[in-house]
Image (tube, rainbow, N blue to C red):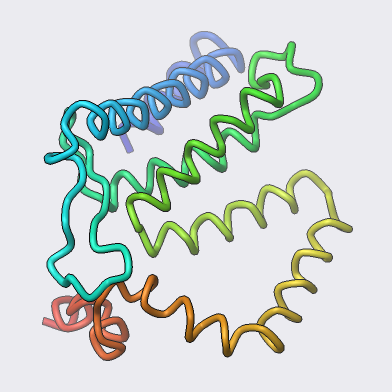
Length: 192
Protein backbone atom coordinates (compact mmCIF):
# COMPACT_ATOMS: atom_id res chain seq x y z
CA UNK A 1 0.00 0.00 0.00
CA UNK A 2 2.85 2.36 0.80
CA UNK A 3 4.47 1.74 -2.57
CA UNK A 4 1.19 2.48 -4.34
CA UNK A 5 0.77 5.72 -2.38
CA UNK A 6 4.32 6.79 -3.25
CA UNK A 7 3.73 6.04 -6.94
CA UNK A 8 0.40 7.89 -6.90
CA UNK A 9 1.91 10.91 -5.13
CA UNK A 10 4.90 11.00 -7.48
CA UNK A 11 2.67 10.78 -10.56
CA UNK A 12 0.37 13.46 -9.21
CA UNK A 13 3.26 15.78 -8.42
CA UNK A 14 5.63 15.17 -11.34
CA UNK A 15 3.52 13.39 -13.97
CA UNK A 16 4.16 10.26 -16.00
CA UNK A 17 7.91 10.86 -15.94
CA UNK A 18 7.91 10.00 -12.23
CA UNK A 19 6.73 6.44 -12.90
CA UNK A 20 9.56 5.88 -15.41
CA UNK A 21 12.13 7.31 -13.00
CA UNK A 22 10.91 5.15 -10.12
CA UNK A 23 10.88 2.08 -12.37
CA UNK A 24 14.42 2.75 -13.52
CA UNK A 25 15.59 3.22 -9.93
CA UNK A 26 13.96 -0.04 -8.82
CA UNK A 27 15.43 -1.89 -11.80
CA UNK A 28 18.99 -0.79 -11.05
CA UNK A 29 18.43 -1.56 -7.36
CA UNK A 30 17.62 -5.17 -8.35
CA UNK A 31 20.75 -5.24 -10.54
CA UNK A 32 22.79 -4.05 -7.54
CA UNK A 33 21.28 -6.71 -5.26
CA UNK A 34 22.03 -9.48 -7.75
CA UNK A 35 25.57 -8.12 -8.15
CA UNK A 36 25.98 -8.17 -4.36
CA UNK A 37 25.00 -11.86 -4.34
CA UNK A 38 27.71 -12.70 -6.88
CA UNK A 39 30.29 -10.56 -5.09
CA UNK A 40 29.46 -12.58 -1.97
CA UNK A 41 29.97 -15.82 -3.92
CA UNK A 42 33.41 -14.65 -5.05
CA UNK A 43 34.60 -13.08 -1.77
CA UNK A 44 32.85 -15.28 0.80
CA UNK A 45 32.03 -18.61 -0.89
CA UNK A 46 31.72 -20.47 2.42
CA UNK A 47 28.93 -18.08 3.47
CA UNK A 48 27.25 -17.59 0.08
CA UNK A 49 27.19 -21.19 -1.09
CA UNK A 50 25.01 -23.05 1.37
CA UNK A 51 24.92 -26.86 1.39
CA UNK A 52 21.41 -28.30 1.32
CA UNK A 53 20.24 -30.28 4.32
CA UNK A 54 19.42 -33.26 2.16
CA UNK A 55 22.63 -34.31 0.44
CA UNK A 56 20.72 -36.63 -1.95
CA UNK A 57 20.02 -33.68 -4.24
CA UNK A 58 21.98 -33.73 -7.53
CA UNK A 59 23.20 -30.19 -6.82
CA UNK A 60 23.62 -30.26 -3.03
CA UNK A 61 23.99 -26.48 -2.56
CA UNK A 62 22.28 -23.19 -3.30
CA UNK A 63 23.39 -19.58 -3.42
CA UNK A 64 22.43 -17.03 -0.77
CA UNK A 65 23.18 -13.36 -0.31
CA UNK A 66 25.91 -12.48 2.20
CA UNK A 67 25.59 -8.71 2.43
CA UNK A 68 22.74 -8.03 2.54
CA UNK A 69 21.72 -11.42 3.85
CA UNK A 70 19.25 -12.97 1.45
CA UNK A 71 17.73 -16.44 1.55
CA UNK A 72 18.07 -18.63 -1.53
CA UNK A 73 14.40 -18.09 -2.41
CA UNK A 74 14.88 -14.31 -2.30
CA UNK A 75 17.95 -14.63 -4.53
CA UNK A 76 15.92 -16.75 -6.95
CA UNK A 77 13.09 -14.20 -6.95
CA UNK A 78 15.60 -11.44 -7.72
CA UNK A 79 16.93 -13.57 -10.59
CA UNK A 80 13.43 -13.95 -12.04
CA UNK A 81 12.73 -10.23 -11.70
CA UNK A 82 16.02 -9.30 -13.32
CA UNK A 83 15.48 -11.75 -16.19
CA UNK A 84 11.93 -10.68 -17.05
CA UNK A 85 12.49 -6.97 -16.48
CA UNK A 86 15.67 -7.01 -18.60
CA UNK A 87 13.84 -8.77 -21.43
CA UNK A 88 11.07 -6.18 -21.16
CA UNK A 89 13.57 -3.31 -21.33
CA UNK A 90 15.45 -4.69 -24.35
CA UNK A 91 14.50 -2.44 -27.23
CA UNK A 92 16.12 -1.60 -30.54
CA UNK A 93 15.00 1.99 -30.02
CA UNK A 94 16.97 2.16 -26.76
CA UNK A 95 17.05 5.94 -26.65
CA UNK A 96 13.75 6.09 -24.74
CA UNK A 97 13.93 6.38 -20.95
CA UNK A 98 12.63 2.87 -20.18
CA UNK A 99 14.57 0.98 -22.86
CA UNK A 100 18.09 -0.44 -22.90
CA UNK A 101 20.49 -1.52 -25.59
CA UNK A 102 19.53 -5.10 -26.43
CA UNK A 103 23.03 -6.45 -25.81
CA UNK A 104 23.11 -5.07 -22.26
CA UNK A 105 19.54 -6.11 -21.54
CA UNK A 106 20.12 -9.68 -22.77
CA UNK A 107 23.35 -9.92 -20.78
CA UNK A 108 21.55 -8.84 -17.60
CA UNK A 109 18.70 -11.27 -18.40
CA UNK A 110 21.27 -14.06 -18.66
CA UNK A 111 22.79 -13.04 -15.31
CA UNK A 112 19.30 -13.14 -13.80
CA UNK A 113 18.65 -16.59 -15.26
CA UNK A 114 21.95 -17.97 -13.95
CA UNK A 115 21.14 -16.45 -10.55
CA UNK A 116 17.77 -18.24 -10.55
CA UNK A 117 19.44 -21.54 -11.41
CA UNK A 118 22.14 -21.10 -8.74
CA UNK A 119 19.53 -20.32 -6.08
CA UNK A 120 17.45 -23.36 -7.09
CA UNK A 121 14.21 -21.47 -6.50
CA UNK A 122 11.57 -23.89 -7.77
CA UNK A 123 8.71 -21.40 -7.66
CA UNK A 124 10.91 -19.03 -9.63
CA UNK A 125 11.07 -21.49 -12.53
CA UNK A 126 7.29 -21.36 -12.85
CA UNK A 127 7.26 -17.58 -12.41
CA UNK A 128 9.84 -17.20 -15.16
CA UNK A 129 7.80 -19.25 -17.63
CA UNK A 130 4.63 -17.32 -16.77
CA UNK A 131 6.41 -13.96 -16.93
CA UNK A 132 7.96 -14.64 -20.33
CA UNK A 133 4.55 -15.79 -21.59
CA UNK A 134 2.93 -12.57 -20.38
CA UNK A 135 5.76 -10.54 -21.89
CA UNK A 136 5.29 -12.22 -25.27
CA UNK A 137 1.54 -11.67 -25.09
CA UNK A 138 1.94 -7.99 -24.18
CA UNK A 139 4.35 -7.42 -27.02
CA UNK A 140 1.73 -8.77 -29.45
CA UNK A 141 4.03 -11.52 -30.60
CA UNK A 142 1.10 -13.81 -31.22
CA UNK A 143 2.93 -16.06 -33.65
CA UNK A 144 5.84 -16.57 -31.29
CA UNK A 145 3.52 -17.05 -28.30
CA UNK A 146 1.40 -19.60 -30.19
CA UNK A 147 4.58 -21.37 -31.31
CA UNK A 148 5.90 -21.53 -27.76
CA UNK A 149 2.56 -22.83 -26.46
CA UNK A 150 2.32 -25.47 -29.20
CA UNK A 151 5.92 -26.46 -28.55
CA UNK A 152 5.13 -26.80 -24.85
CA UNK A 153 2.11 -29.01 -25.60
CA UNK A 154 4.11 -31.25 -27.94
CA UNK A 155 6.92 -31.40 -25.40
CA UNK A 156 4.53 -32.38 -22.62
CA UNK A 157 2.91 -35.11 -24.73
CA UNK A 158 6.02 -36.73 -26.18
CA UNK A 159 9.09 -35.74 -24.22
CA UNK A 160 7.80 -35.04 -20.72
CA UNK A 161 7.65 -38.56 -19.26
CA UNK A 162 11.37 -39.20 -19.77
CA UNK A 163 12.29 -35.58 -19.05
CA UNK A 164 10.37 -35.60 -15.77
CA UNK A 165 12.18 -38.75 -14.66
CA UNK A 166 15.53 -37.16 -15.46
CA UNK A 167 14.68 -33.72 -14.01
CA UNK A 168 12.91 -34.96 -10.90
CA UNK A 169 16.07 -35.17 -8.74
CA UNK A 170 16.93 -31.57 -9.61
CA UNK A 171 13.41 -30.28 -8.99
CA UNK A 172 12.96 -32.25 -5.79
CA UNK A 173 16.38 -31.19 -4.46
CA UNK A 174 16.68 -34.41 -2.48
CA UNK A 175 13.12 -34.42 -1.15
CA UNK A 176 10.75 -37.32 -1.50
CA UNK A 177 7.76 -37.00 -3.82
CA UNK A 178 5.43 -36.90 -0.79
CA UNK A 179 7.38 -33.99 0.75
CA UNK A 180 7.15 -32.08 -2.53
CA UNK A 181 3.40 -32.71 -2.80
CA UNK A 182 3.01 -31.26 0.69
CA UNK A 183 5.10 -28.26 -0.41
CA UNK A 184 7.75 -29.12 2.17
CA UNK A 185 5.19 -29.17 5.02
CA UNK A 186 3.75 -25.78 4.04
CA UNK A 187 0.31 -27.30 3.39
CA UNK A 188 0.20 -28.67 6.93
CA UNK A 189 1.33 -25.31 8.30
CA UNK A 190 -1.36 -23.44 6.32
CA UNK A 191 -4.03 -25.91 7.46
CA UNK A 192 -2.98 -25.36 11.09
